[in-house]
Figure 1 (cartoon, rainbow, N blue to C red):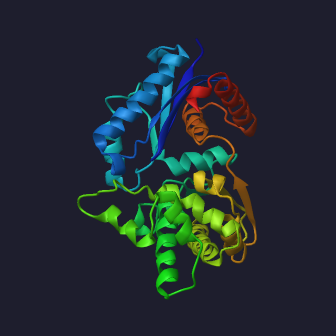
Figure 2 (cartoon, rainbow, N blue to C red; figure 1 turned 180 degrees about the vertical axis):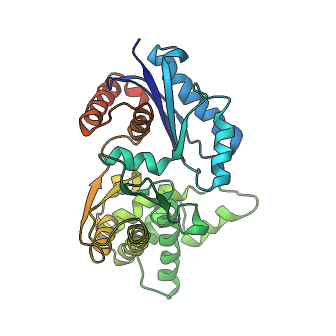
Length: 336
């Protein structure tokens, strides 16, 4: 068996593990639930990581001796203390005793660029903005939950839209179709009943804010100005985070790749959020290349694992990995 590496993208909603050979072939894939220890706890994070890794190793058919290295891109790995926690979680379950550990946004950046240099803007379950320059210096702005400004995440957009809907109902702002849309989606007779989700006894169960985000995009697509403003505000905040990174990591005239990733950017039915981000950045830095992430971020983890072994990981190699991954998933649709 040829030499192989393991790459893992551990997000807040799903964990994807992939085993790839030195020649760029995907040999095994494993998938499990979210493994951000900050939201699910250390024990559950370890369980989900272990499940995905074991699946990937089992389906690859290789032994641990054939696995030369691994790279883990893990959400929740933000501060030094967080990295220490994730290393403790990984130590007993990683097939390789030595491994690379980075934030999951960094592997998305590597998956979307030729060299892992630029900025990745992620909007999905959570949101993050991280940059990396040619010297390997990285910088993150926000990205550690609501208290740091989780702009663009599904939950942040939904919460901002709920507040805007209440303002429209009580006269503090213009009315919006969001009120009716939220009530219909949640089965409420009136929007004010949504506060019952925060009652101690939780008669309605927990409120999945993220499930409301698509309604914000749909309302914006239909022309609702309140919904559009929610997306515009989040877009400006994301753009501001990106500009802080550009100003600190890159020269004034230096070209910068900006990668958009995450389910919110990928699935939003209105382009307003991304368009606002692009306009904000373009008005302050003229040499920017905007990229929509098409490959799974886990391929960025594979790329880092390749490079750590001293293997070439050019654009051609990434194309081979991308094609092999697609072929593998086409043959194993339940892994998607």
